[in-house]
Amino acid sequence: MRKSSWVLLVLVAFVAVGLLAAACGGGEEATTVSAPVTTAGPDTTAPASTDTTVPAETTTSVANTAPFKLGLAISLTGDSAAPCGQIKEGMETEVKYLNANGGIKGRQIELVLVDDQSKMDTALAAVQSLIDQKVDAIIGPFPAWTNLSARQMAEQAGVLLICWGPWSVSDQDTEKSQGISWKYTFQIATGPDGGADAYLKEMLADGRKKVLGVGDQMPMSQDTLTYLKELLPQNGVEFTLMPDSWGLGETDVTPIANKIAAKAKEVGPDAILLASNPVHVNQMTKTLRSLGVTVPIYNQASGAHPVVMLAPAGNDPKNVAGDFTFGPAIVDPSKIPDAYASKQELVAFTARWKVDFPDEPFASLFLGFPYDAIHILKAAVESATADTPDAWGASLEKVDWWGAQGHYVFSPTDHVGNHGGFLQWQYTETEGFKFVRELN
Image (cartoon, rainbow, N blue to C red; front, side):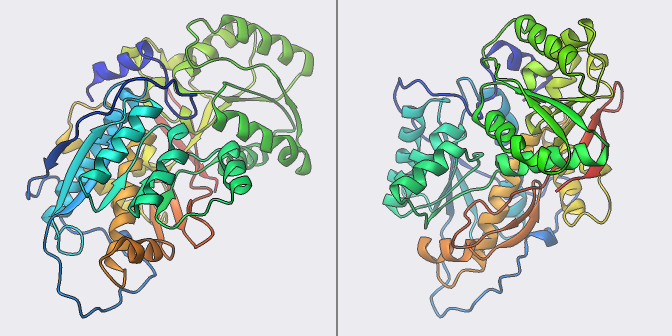
């Protein structure tokens, strides 16, 4: 994805985490991409952090040397195509890198790419097409609202599937009410529990005592703010949650900004929590400042995205400079503390990616998605007792690993594995994201 792609992010409908899907269209025909066995980038040694605390167990079966067919279902087209650009790039970089270093358990990875088109029916058709092609494992689809149905499809087929999410309270309620359990599928993005905890840690560290919260209509945004209704007061922080929200397709943020500014004048907060998709952050902040709002604004993880500060997309970094967001280490691993467990591997990964895609301005939180997914998959397969989806799923439940989004610890009852992984970042005019502190 080139710089011009970020401009498209403003023109298409916005980031696909939490949208309500409209069903239409048909499945996309799968395209098989075999990654070349070449060594590209500054680092060609396998990263230490891909090892897990799960010891590999021996087996007497004959080694499988056939290609490892890895299905990748992402939004090549549709509302979520822009953020998926770096997911595709990151996956291509790591497939090439891993193949140059032995693949997965000695098997070269063959990437089978399908388009979920950012819609429910085409996402499920994409997953079914990968199942029909008898891939070894599936990563995706991308839109969070498709994950529950896609996981159920993979469970029925007995195929290992890793999707990102994040999970929603609504989906978890459905799982509980229907008695749904998971054996082969995992959803690895930190959910609203981790987001709310990150907000809490920021407020306590920065000494905030009276906070105003508002968010867009994404489930992640609303679920995070709902958690904070109890979490902040329990920790001595007064919290006012606005009932107002705005849609992801909103082209004029002035009406909601007027409401926020009026509420801020009424409440007198010392900080505003803006749980927004990245596209609205810059213009929302600019409008709030023009209306006299001067207190610091704190954005959620989706705000850890280049478009917030990217001038070619029409966003002046001066509008947000000095405000904050939380996000994973992949935002800029060169700036995080040396003690961070996966720092060196993340620095090496982003360097490999920049060699492959030199025109990219800088990384986004989405770049960490493919890195974590493929390395978690590799860890599970290589520590499994057998070369089967049953064994891989059981092995993944024991994975303990540090990656781009933090520390994953899976279990038979936790197929998310990561409930934190956020760091505090500050927007700047000239330096991109400035590291502030680790949060969770």
